Image (cartoon, rainbow, N blue to C red):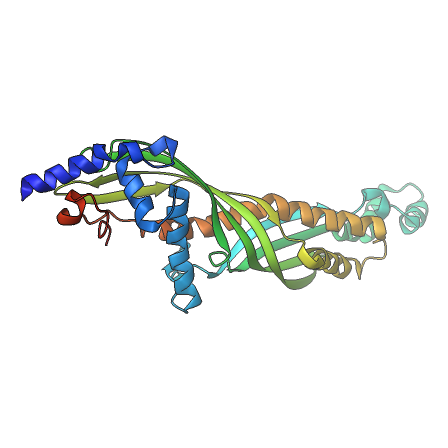
Length: 324
């Protein structure tokens, strides 16, 4: 029986190579068998099938959960409620010359050159104005929804050595997934001249691409069934947040609130505020989203396991029952 089992392993590791996988970087029998089991023609197809299993569970209300960070644990892979800072920055509104207007000129003229009087004018007129020119803003991502349910595997490249059955297999890979219909809940807090305001917005139909490198080790031999994967830092690109003008409305609302109590806040300064907020979100949002999706992608990939080989079927040349 043991010899039959070993013969099966040798057949799997070498005899199927002629009918091998469509993945040129990992053209081995174990990959070919996995693709046949899932009814697909590539490892990308296998990954998509595994993902669809998680999506089916989420649709049935049984989503898997992950830990995102300390204080944000047991989160649904399709509904992450985790307060994470996107940016916390300050900007200057207009130029300092705004604060040296008519009031300052009149006050200084009345000082008749006395320096102590001039400093008093600056303290009374210029300093409060300069404080108004400094806008402080903090924006957080409060919730990410529908990331998993609207995810597809758009690319998967794998390079491997070994066959995973007789010789342990090691691999390096790069995957890209596309998310077509995510939702973000954002919160923006602004402070200017001691006046604070908070604005929340729900952004729907957000799309993005996520690329993640990963590597691993597979040993599905006679006495060992072991698979290990480690993931690198994901990269989020092509985030589109302006569907239905929700994003622009959100930014315009922030600019309107800030400008409401500033006499010098004209259209040009409003434009500066909207440009600042948009640039900060575009620059910093990808890293925050990637950090939330990292454990989600790792959780999805964790379902991959070694195949169970049924000797009778395998030695007869059949793949029926190869994976259970």
